[in-house]
Amino acid sequence: MFNRLGLLAVFLTLLSILGGCGTSPSARRGLGSNEVPDVPSRISQGQADDITIYAVGLVGTPYRYGGNTPDSGFDCSGLIGYIYQKRAGLAPPRTVARMQHWGQPVLSDNIRSGDLVLFAQSDVVTHAGIYVGAGRFVHAPSTGGEVRLDQLNSRYWSSQQVTFRRP
Image 1 (spheres, one colour):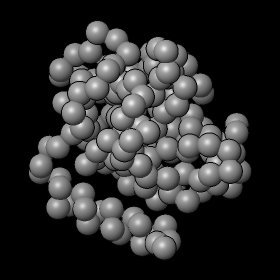
Image 2 (tube, rainbow, N blue to C red):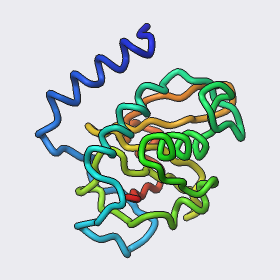
Image 3 (cartoon, rainbow, N blue to C red):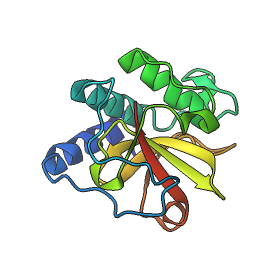
């Protein structure tokens, strides 16, 4: 079992190997048809990379409903808010319902590390994470769990409606 530092080292190695590949998950059912291919951002590529590294470094932090710090634990929107505030000086909305309107929509073929990943059931956003590259995202999944790194193409997540947003 990797500790946080070991997981971060493995992930950074993978990022450096895959960095030039430009791979992204295949298109899935999105939440809206207003997605655009080339999306401006309030954050630089360097900030997006910093958000990614910081997010991976929080893997293993306990989940806590309403939590928004590493000491208290995180829920999914608290994790996103904490990371964006600390690494880019941006304050995203506190709820996933409001995050679906924050930033600009991004096509699945154009996602980059640091983008938001939003999941929905019946067109209602219920969960969010941060895309970290190579088809993976960091999120705080549920009570009793902890912040973790998952694959977008896993059986569970690929069955969800998904959309991407860039602040």
